[in-house]
Image (cartoon, rainbow over all chains, first blue to last red; front, side):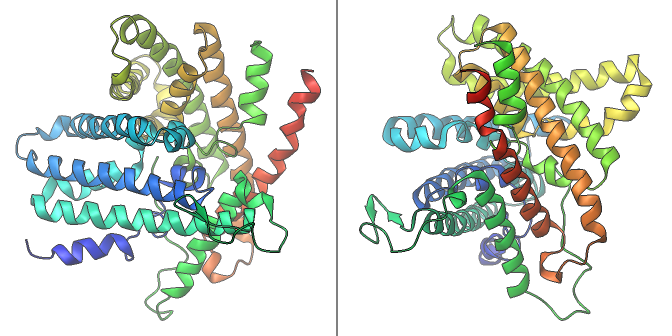
Length: 215
Length: 195
């Protein structure tokens, strides 16, 4: 029970999966073309992350450590299938837009990383708090990138199904922002912005940006 | 669809990394040196081709006939994970030299979304067996092309005087964006070649 709030907050900023740990970038880049895409992708990932964290934490005593990774993958794949089928049933249009990136949640590095580093060694409630925090951090980062790309690329923002600015603001939209290059550039600048905002005094700062080698 | 079209599409026009955003983690994580990038690329080509073949067989002989298509995600990821493990053991036994070169990259390939991605794309495009294998091979080559070019860029970035906030990942992402712009040059290649 203790430290649940801290576990929750950890994923939001200190260890924001996308902007700080730079994990799970494939969906963050691929589906962040419009705000609502980012939102629903975030919801899907948050569900899978929280549910798999909970289940893995509950069964952590029974999993032999030698086969733990395959077990985690089966658990995660199960919840991904749940999301995939539910989205297909209730949000068919969004399901089509997100395409293969819904089933690909199963190989999202964040989820397996949290299962291995957190859920498999903490009590259930902390694992849920961590899953929610990480999921929310992912969602916020994704929505931020999506909003910038949609706004600059179409001169408009669609919330729900209504455009915020009627027929669009009077500036020429930079179409490149909604295309693949815009994704790389926006995300790169977002990571840099967070670096600037959270900059510590030079002495405390590690040299260069943090990099994680993973696949 | 002709094989040439699949190859051109997967390597250049719809490059897996720069256009489809698959396999970004290894693309950023293992691209700081040309040598490691080449090793990773070779391992990906190898596993992708095998994975395309084997997931096709599983899908068309097991999942479809028994009406189990909804188990696709679970089955594919397990097949790929076992395949990678198996390949690792075989290489270790039969070819120590190859194991030296590819060994360290194999375990992290399981969670490379490009592998599962190519398997899913093969199914969604309704490719026949040979088309799937060719697509897997070409997709792997596209990944290798992107990561090798990118490693070249990054080796120079190390020496460049980058602003502190942009050091590391941010500048790498921006450079990848510029490479992606360059790959847009291939968009019309398709129309030019096949019409």
